[in-house]
Length: 395
Image (tube, rainbow, N blue to C red; front, top):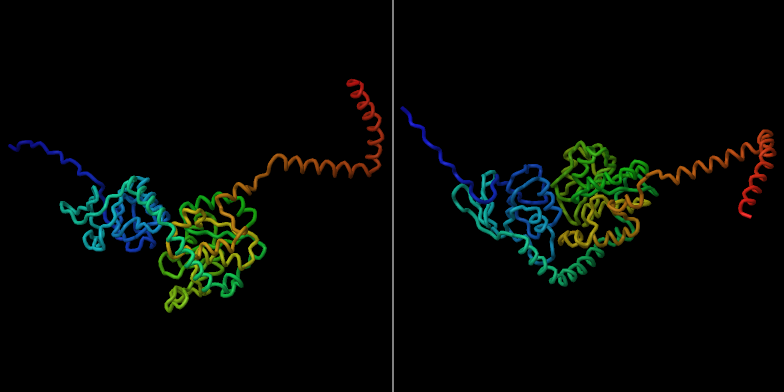
């Protein structure tokens, strides 16, 4: 006779668990991530845009080989992750990729990473207080970053003066938008919602659309199409070939002095892009294209517009963004404020104005006819009597 045994309840271990996913470059495609993943990456001074992309992917923990905040500038990525309740561990060391195998199920607790029963890596567990203290320290050191910005801006102006002042080097596009509005779509967090907010503007004004990199793939799902696609110099996050073939123009950026370019890669795919040699970022290059084409107004969707976003860009694109915004001046309008200025709605006063104008025109047309003159002759005495009656009431 087999005796029934009581099964023991195994208590759940503390921490968060999930399969590890290596992300050597956090700016590369995040399509392989699924909700519940533990991301392993090496990203010093993570920006807010990357952090939001990780949140949108549904990861439960972020393991960083380097420091999340180096102190060079107050980057917003760590604060975004911590405020969302994610487990964030940094300073795990460059060998974390070897210690935490890709695809292996791991458990993260109190800054320690466990594979099975073994602790394989230890780092710094970030919480809200620690992040706030480090950001405050980074803000105190912004003076040196301002000096670096000044130097980088002057260097960028020196290299790109012909482009910025005379539009030299801008490739000739088939798409024309002189004296017409242009919408430039970047990949900043929430750009889809911004595009929906200006739907009345795009429906009525029919602007030319310039999309930056892989954003062009998502535009079709939102009922829009990119007329021009700007592809950055790196080959990460390239749009699909069919998306590029649907665009009227594909502009491939090339760094000054670069030998292998993304344009060569696109030509191997059967796509003949226009080459644009510049050190500007892809977003800024799209703005420069819009301005060089004589756009009457440029609406920025998903671009870095605020001071926090500007500082959070990091080192490489800071001078490019600063100078390009100066060149754009009053021509550039952010999509977040466009609905306040333009909503395309027909208001009651507009209808009353149209009705009033129509009534005046109708009365004038009838008044020149014999019937209208007869009506006016009959109406004159009655109107005079009514006016005299009203005056008598107030006398």
